[in-house]
Image (cartoon, rainbow, N blue to C red):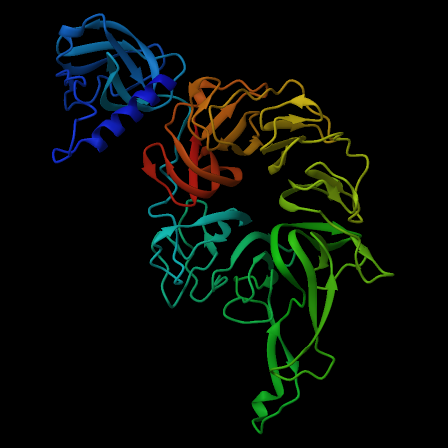
Length: 545
C-alpha cells in the first residue's frame, strides 16, 4: 500500500537526522517512543503458503496494542485471525506476491521475516547459473559489473549461443579462452568448452543479434569496429561453425621484401555498417538467404580488393542508407531494398531514433518502433511497417499511432505487443502497453491496468496464452507487483503466476523451452535482482503445472 511507503520514507528521514552533537533545538523532540514490539528470530509457520491460508508469526509485545495493529505481507493488508502477546495469526491476502511481513501500529512500522507465496512460477534450479553474465570494461573476466544479454540462437537441441555486452559467464572466462559478448552454452546453462572459439568482440563493442545460416555459419551484428581483435569488421560480420571469424586470403601489393606479405587475411564477409544495429533478421527471398538490419546508422561500406590494395591501404566504397538495409550473406548490398539506384543511396529512414523492430516471418515485412514522426518522408507515429522492398507499407493501418515514444515491440502467436511512454494508440487509451492485430488495429479486449510509477519496457504473448510484462513499476492494478507480471489476454493479473518477489532490470528477449522436462521461460536482458536474489543477465523461470 502507498501509505506504508510514506511511513517507511519518514522513518528513514528520522534516523538520518538524529545527531547528539547538533546545536539548537531538536526538531524531532517529542517524537514517538519505541513500541517494544519486535518479530522473534523465527520463520513464520508454515514458511510458505497460498492466498487464504492461515500463517502464524512469532512476535513479542503486541498485547498492549490490541485493536491498533495492522499486518501486511509484501505491503498487502492481511486479515488478523487472532493475536497474543507473543504470536499473531493472519490470513494470506488473496492478491499478494512473495515479500516481507510487517506490522504497523500508530504509524510506526516493525519489519518481519520474508514470506513465500506459493504459485506456478519459480526459478528453474536445473539451469546452471551461478555468477551469471559479468562485464568488465577492462576486458575478459573479472566481471566487476553485471552483463547484458540481448539475443540467442538455437544451434541444436543441446547448443545455444548468446550475445550481448558481457566479458564473463559463471566466472569461466580466461585469457586463453575469453568471453566477449558471445558464449556457447548447452540447454542447462553449462559452457560448451572449445578452446579459442566464440571469441567475440573487444574494446567495448557488443552484439545484439545472432543468426545461424543454412550452412551452419553464423551472422552476428551489433555495435563494434573490430572483431577478435581484427579491423575490417564493423556492425556486422560472419563466423565459422565453431564461432571463429570467417576469413579469406587476398593478394596485395607487397611493399616489403618479405614474400609472406604477398597475401593478407581479411573477413570473408565484406560488408560493414557504421553505427548501431539494434536488430537483424535472417530472411529468404527468391530462394536466397539475406540479412535485414535495423538500427541507428546511415552508412554502409565495403572494401574493393580489386583496386590494388596493400596490407595498410584499401579502397573503400561507401553508400548512405538510413536505418534499414538488406545484405547478401557475403556482405554485398542488396540494392533492391530501401535503395534508389538513380541516386545510389537509400530511399530514406526515420526522422528520429529507432528503438526496436520485429519481423513478420510469413511475408518478411518488418515493423520498426521508436521516437519518430516520419519515415521515408511519410507520416509514421513512432511505428512503421516496411514491405519486402524496404518501403513504407501503407496497408499497416495504425492511424494516429502512439502519442509518445515506443520502446519495444514483440510479435508472437499472431499478435503484436508494444510498450513505451504513451497513453493512447490511435485514439484508444492504453496506459503504455497495447496489443495489436497484424493489420495494425488495436485489440480492444486487452486492457492494461494502471501502474503506480515507472514504465513498462517489455511485453510478449507466450505460447500458453499468458502475457509476460516487465518494467520499472512497483504496483499493478493497485496491488504490489514489482517489475515482472503475468497477465491474461484481457490484462487481468494472474495471482497463481505472480507469486514470486520483486524483479529489477530491463528485459530484451524471451524464449520458451523445456529444461529437465520442465516448461521454462528464459529471460534475457540487463537483469540485476529477482525474488530477493542477485541475478546477472539471464533468468530461467519454471512454469509449474
